Amino acid sequence: MGRPGSTSGLDPRRPLWQAPGIVRRALLALIVIAPTWAAADTVTGYDHGKKIKIQVTKVDGAVVAVRTAKAYRQMAKAAHKDGVELGIRSGYRSLAQQQHLYDAFLKGQGNSAAPPGMSNHENGTALDLKLTDPDAHKWLVKHAAKYGFAATVPGEPWHWEFVGSTATAAAKPAPVKAKKRTAHKHAEEQEEESAF
Ligand SMILES: [Zn+2]
Image (cartoon, rainbow, N blue to C red):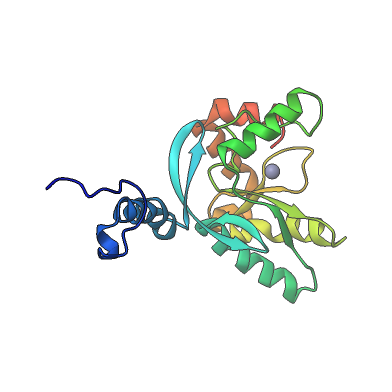
């Protein structure tokens, strides 16, 4: 009765599933791995300090919120038709990535950055675009609003945010920003002082 003599390792006379620790380890592995598979495209983001879940996808190798990516792809396609190539340098950022940038900024080692939890890269709406094509910025200024994108940080011509696509946005980018400022006044003011 009780335990067999050996307390360690596999006993060749017993089925594998009875081996000590094996089943437990296999279950543990599944518990650890399965959520990673299931939630591969959902990440934790922050919207003006509030924790949110964001669906993300990859565009140009960058992680981008699905909603922003959809609008960006349409915009990039239109730019391409006009002979202008757009690209994404940075899209969604995790809290840790923003913390890293913010720490570098505080040490004087990087561009100015929003405090962790406060960057619109963390809520998935901001994109830092590649402006390597000399016509890219000019094209964006003229057409980006049609696709719901607005330049929101003075002094950062690469930083564009998906603010939603409406006829009003296309015609008058400024009022859209004014409306947003009312909703998130404090955060927006902070955003304009520091860069994102
Ligand atoms: Zn940015």
